[in-house]
Image (cartoon, rainbow, N blue to C red; front, side, top):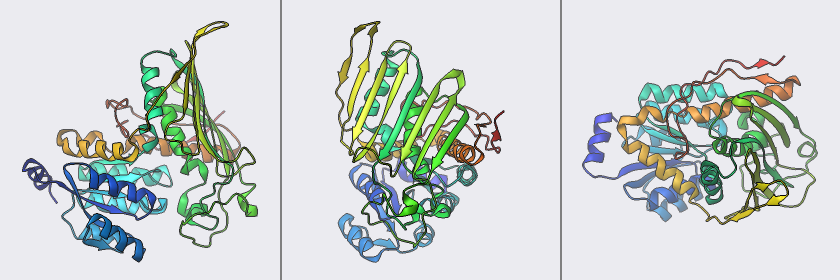
Length: 397
């Protein structure tokens, strides 16, 4: 499909034609968004599972149903496609779709490694198409309310944070692709930790991470503990990844973030994520338990022993619906396609790579600086940070 045909079709008022590759929970969020939003039509889906493919095709009135993603891409006539499959498939599918002239919205993480992510960004540049990655947690209402409070100066300049996503027993099915290092790229750090990394850096205003020091632990999963009941596809893998990670990020300008994430740990039951921020004029705390639509959000201010703490109310936000809507807005803005090339997600991958390298080396790892672009990161979910330098991170002194 040529740029001219895509542009002329949009100008003629026809809906964008969308496909979704992947039939699980994430893929269904994209299907629902395409079926709900104006100006787009869900026309094709792909996935290996016969019964879900048939059921979802019927639910959304989609006649073009494929077992193989390559057939969906080769059949043509698509403007946009969402990629919601296991992580090891993100790069080949995304590159294939971009090279076919299709704009791509991929689920997180962008890929297993920064090197893989770079091939995806390169394909976006080569094809002149949009590549974005779904960081839906920053589109939660409570995260958006906290971002608005920070931007309004309510806590001054944030200089330190503790950002977490912790589970008591939440390994996504022992023996699934999630626990296979080659297929997943890692454990909770790359799976749920990448969400925490994203919303923490987003709240800080997208500073560059200059150094990373990390430890990882694999104590429970290797003994068959901490698994959750799940319909994730089993591949018979041994438990090859961490079940807990703790990372210290040093930021440009002197700020710092401690990121902690676990799939399994002896802690209070349930699933909890959030962030505690310390600023020059105040602080903030957000705590979300068991996927509550809106978490407990407090702003701490005052002078000395005098406190003026405020509980902020927030709605549930629009999650994947907002992510897909923004993606479609960027696709409609042809003049700025080059701004949306997946570079922010690539930068997140560089940080995750550095954390795993630090844990393996037992030493701090410094990152080569990325080139910062001009996109407004306060209003987008995958803003352009320029072409990141993916040089091998070096061991710190």
